[in-house]
Length: 96
Image 1 (cartoon, rainbow, N blue to C red):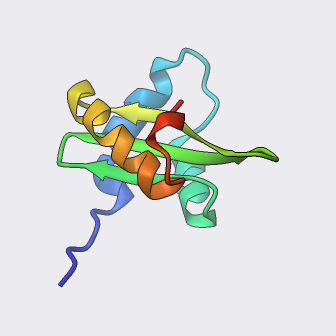
Image 2: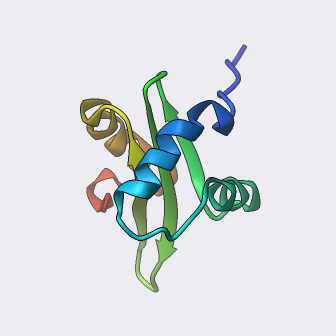
């Protein structure tokens, strides 16, 4: 049996902290939640203390994974990034 992913609400505080860190408020938590629901962003919970949000940008010759919001333990995020890239686009070398 596959374990159920945690709900995005469990990571709300981390996501809001990351959104505020950029200095310019481009998204609210509700915007993020809607982006995930609509399918243009992907929510990646990493353990209990880290989270990554990604989107795919498609170019004529390749796809590029954009990690546009990340919060928590940097070592967890760095360790997960190649796996996320492999799952999203099949090439961990194009993480950006």
